[in-house]
Length: 154
Image (cartoon, rainbow, N blue to C red; front, side, top):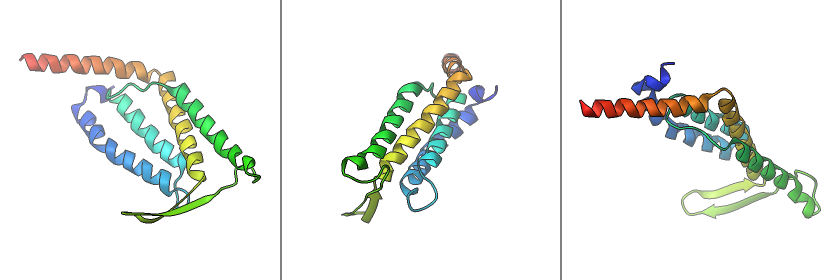
């Protein structure tokens, strides 16, 4: 595989990761009134994790706790309206004024979308782990470090 050995791929993924993370956050927060939401944001974040894993920039860990946290957030958001006498998964909308952003509107669907995002990213990490990408990332990090040390000697 060329990705762990290509400095161009590594630099490209390092440069594109912050932009992709910003797009993921936009999709997460804009998903209530526009296209996007927790699933789309989770796919973008998962793509960042997958690309960084394949190029050896990071070794993802913690799929099970991330999935469990997402499921807990989803269940809590779904059941919370029942405590106030509303229907299951009923949404409440909150609005307020922020100094820089002006009028901001959000609702109880945002925590639900955050939980969905956590589940999707956790599933992508579990998939990468199942395919052996974690070991690939760890071995490529070691070989990349060895090559960098050899270049430093010469």
